[in-house]
Amino acid sequence: MAEKVLIIGAGISGLSAGCYLQMNGFETAIYEMHSLPGGLCTSWIKDGYKIDGCIHWLVGTKPGTGFYNLWNELIDMKSLIITDHEIFFRCEDSAGNFINFYNNIDQLENELLAKAPEDIAVINDYIHAVRKFSRMNLPVPKPRELFTLRDAFSSLRIMGPYLPAIKKWTNVSIADFASRCKNPLLRKTIENLFVPEMSVVFAMITTAWMNNKDAGYPIGGSLEFAKKIEETYLRSGGQIYYRNKVDKIIVESVNGKSKASGIITSEGKVEKADYIISAADGNFTLNELLEGKFTDQKISKFYKKSLPFSSYLQLSLGVDRKLISEVPSLIIPLSKRVYIDPSNTINEIKIRIHNFDPTLAPDGKTLISAMILTREDEYWTNLRTDNFEGYKKEKKRIISEVIAGAEHRLGPLQSHLEMSDLSTPATVIRYTNNWKGSFEGWVITPETGLKQLPVTLPDLNNFYMTGQWVAPGGGLPTVMMSARGVSQIICKKSKKKFITS
Image (cartoon, rainbow, N blue to C red; front, side):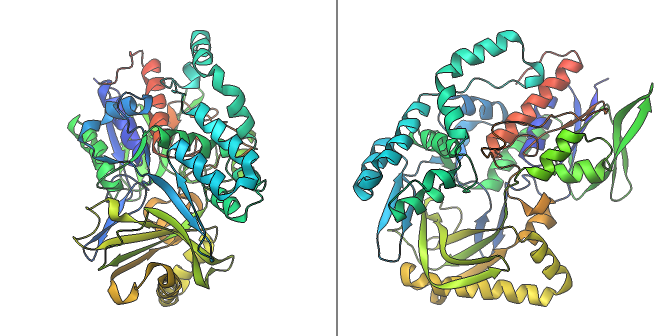
């Protein structure tokens, strides 16, 4: 009889774990609080437009590369239609000056030197690192719990040439790297490569992937990508129970040792199994599902001291216009400052013009979206709970003011508006239960470096965690690899040879 594994959460990590375990002969079931797969990797329909909520680029879209081969274990990558953007984003100022951050290294170098020659030293540092990382092909991942001395030497042989640069730039944040710039527009451009607290090495490696055309966008968007993994999982015999939130992990004492042995759902359903995997929110798993009983000083300190990604508001507009001449992503100044919440008033906005994906809007029309970062998750959650009419009024106000502030640059929007939508941190928490409404897990900062949290917990057997809360940096490849690693560990414990087909 096959050993049974219960997985909490049908995000990309939970789905991936289910696929790998089904491949290796386990009986699995996934319990998911939402009605759809993907977790944060999602899309939704409103007024004839498909609003995409996750993928800006997917690492692993170039055939033959390491991540491509890993994704191909889960889905048929040839079934994806990939588009590679020429420009990562354009950063503009109020005087009409702009910098195009090209994905091609040579074009990028020429653009930066032409627009900010006074910052040649900063530009050379970035371009030199990107050129080096563009030659890097990461080894097939193996969880550190299973690493042997031979694995260590093999990884060192592959990664050795890149380790000094990785170490150097991991210790520098994007904000600190940008602060070296004399040119204010270049400084703003670099600050917007990703979140400013993140190590600049992340941006450098991402540019290298873009240059190699290994980080394209899959046409159809995030939910369609998640559904492809769901399809693989269901076809392999796995089961998913949607609208089934898990309230508790059952822990039993066996020979004086604690062992995870099942779950209890919010509807009172009890399900027993040989192994339990949480691919759900880390804080909820530790402090609610396990009642805070299986943490240690290291884990507690990480949750208290380390920086999670912020939450966000996502503004989406459907307009009866084609913005043909615009790049896919741009940062523009607003004609008037817009108050968002108690700690956030914006005078510029980073928007995406989704002309590159014809599945997101009807013919001749355009989906525009913007991600506005905030750490006011409690403000938005409390406002929605305590004053729902006020919550709706605030959302309507922000939509109106951002539209008015962007029309000087994008042309008429309000008169062509067919759809508007604003999700908030309260929305993220309602549908994903992610701690603080975070859009990923932990930010890789100079302080955290490339450290990972353990996938097992002290004094608790047969339980594993996977996903963004044990793998800092977040992103879809990271959580997929985390699930793959946990599946390898379970196979090892069950004396199975790990297979991927």
